[in-house]
Image 1: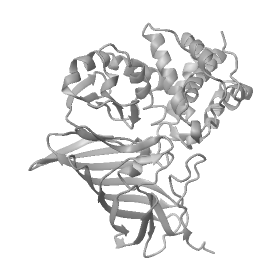
Image 2: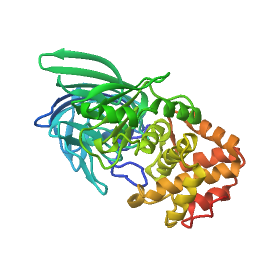
Image 3: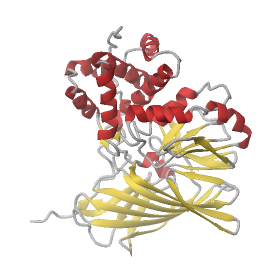
Image 4: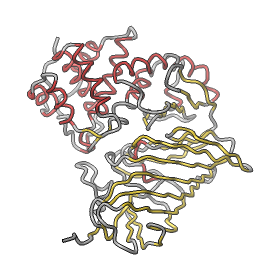
Length: 435
């Protein structure tokens, strides 16, 4: 007896952000054709989305911000739709069977703007000359229709057309550039499974320079005025890349791109195969080199090894923070033990980082206590097993999604007792730091 079609959920199963993401299907590929006018900040888009139903569907939804939808088709046929409250709700002409592959086309346009949330404005932002996307955790719908949940990874093709003087960097391997009149069309492909929040577009008047030599292509797009300071601040990038490859295994993407905006930013942000820094993070004194390490470490921990649910965010931020401390130790700065002792004395010890709550998912304790936990684990295991565990974590879960229980299960294979993680991750009180 077949199951009757039902509506797809317009909420996800995420424990922290259920209003982002949708149920009833999984996306496999996004094909985005975008045309952007920098001056008026006008975006025209044609999204073609390939998906697979996980239940019989009468209708389904996508996340999309305040952009005007002009047409929706499902499998080449016009579909009815409504668009409000950040949800594009679609009813195809015929129900979709469980397990069926289907294609959605959405034509849209408008003035892209960030998505408002408890962390401020997230997503597409105008710069003094250009634009940028910093989408963690809810900003992807500010520029394309999507299933906005970190566990719904897909591949991408992005074609982006804008005025020719502007440098365009999209999270993907560059495939072609074609100039036509006063505009240039840039085509990028992201063949690795990628979360929506890790897709990014950067548009600016940038010079493109080499970032580091070695097996991994590394380049940067920067304002010309910062060339000298950038060359010094990022001068050890090739060494940092080699060090992180030693820790976590092969670099998981085809290339790595750094963008430095001509505007100041509160914090750098990572995207898939890309990191974005503000002009204020480049001073010619390597003041912010730890952030260079942090964002690059996310390519393994957070991007390739992604989150099954936002509750597990310490797996992103604790690992990237500990990578900072390990680089400091390797490069002649304070040791990881010194960093851990310093932060152990400073963190409040009032947060169980395995489940910090949505309001505190970006709390400094998630970062610092996460790193202290890894340092305590290093003491528990000894260096050789600990670094073997880090390597296995990043390679066994390459391009997958993970939870805290996945990590503790791996640690158990190395003989770590369950009580260790109960104290460090699941209780608010901070355990003593091993000497």
